[in-house]
Amino acid sequence: MSSNLLRQEDYLHVLLLALPLVVGGVLHMLAVKWNVLSYLRIPIHQRWFGQNKTWRGFIIMPLATWPGVVLSQYLEGLFDLNTPLLTLQPAWYLALASGLGYCLAELPNSYLKRRLGIREGQTSEKYKIFFIILDQADSIFGCLIVYKLILPLPWNIFWFTIAFGTLLHLFINVSLYKLKVRKNPF
Image 1 (cartoon, helix red, strand yellow):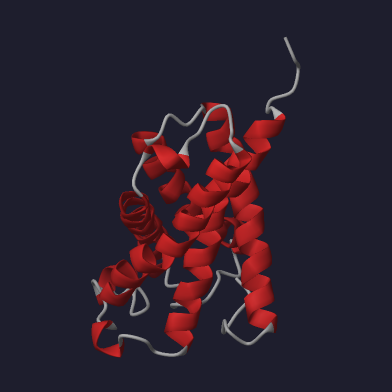
Image 2: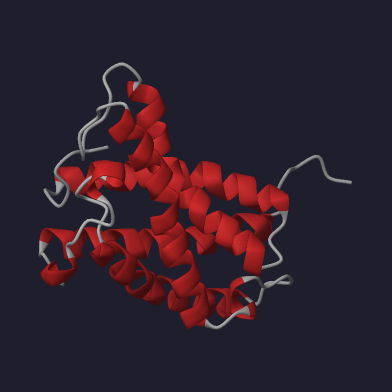
């Protein structure tokens, strides 16, 4: 028995599971920057979650995640993996489920920040590292819960994808900030 937590194929699964979230997240940020579907920029519940958690996100994220799901499914088929994951469900279903999981998982974090008096788009100075990590991990965790519910996702890949996805999310947010797509890096 190998002492490695992941096999070589598992690392590829981690990348393929993260790809739709990366594509969806970047397309969502562009939609926010360009004010796409501005008429849906209605807060879900301003007092609980703030003005940045809007119905627009719940529409755009599933749509924005779809190209990444299609690409991941294509690559999974191209690599002819021994244990396919993403090709076991239709692309539209995975995009809808993971896009909604992404959005829903951000709500508890926003709720907590509003209760602590942290303004929308800001990070707490008192709990800065905690909220920077939480801001990156919450949506990844939501998507992985969805994946775990609808795919035969092994736990080792689940946890590794959360760790990898959180770091990747941080890297992408900082990159989008430097490209002036995001207003802040975290």
